[in-house]
Length: 296
Image 1 (cartoon, one colour):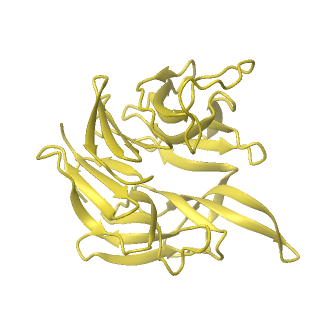
Image 2 (cartoon, one colour):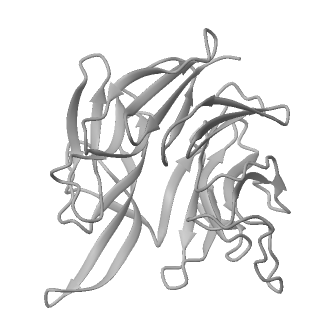
């Protein structure tokens, strides 16, 4: 097994596992008491990008700004700041040359001082100018690129019914891979190293338009139990790859191209290899995981 896992624990901070050396987690950043840590990404300059807020700024809804964390100096630098407690930035993702930071933003919309709606958007911005942002997709979240940066994958959300669909943009054209209503919920889209497969996490079993949701397993706070699926970028019927049964997990694929993957879910960081599940750590609560070729 090769590479390094970086994962978050919302109770304590950020941890690292060197898969070539040991499966023992090492803490690399301690979360100050009461602070909020939701998302993580690796920037081209080697720093980590965090969806994070301090205990003093988290607000009623525990929303987050975006920060850069230098693991060598342990210093944080704010990249994007919320305008109010209802706004939040999360799911950061970097352009390979570091010139654009992509993220999901929820933005409250007001009329005559009263909240009338909340917009969900995928945006991008030059890190040096947070006011020069560009809206890429409305009612969408969790943008990721293929390793060769030619395609991107994202989730579209029906802001009225909250139904989710999975979309691929290829050669400037976006098309639906997983239609709205096929699963109860979707999360953590990823593209394989060769760009041929779209991986994702889904709550519940695959549905058809005429089949109601009848979960055979106990419902969890974020819907029926979640599992890992994949579908060809050409389309077709998705294939279930694991039976995990966790709640609202996140996913990391092997950067070296194997079919192994790691899932972060409350109470378990799980490596899935050759159809078998291996428990690597016991993070408390919801978090995210990166599988990198080298330590940042």
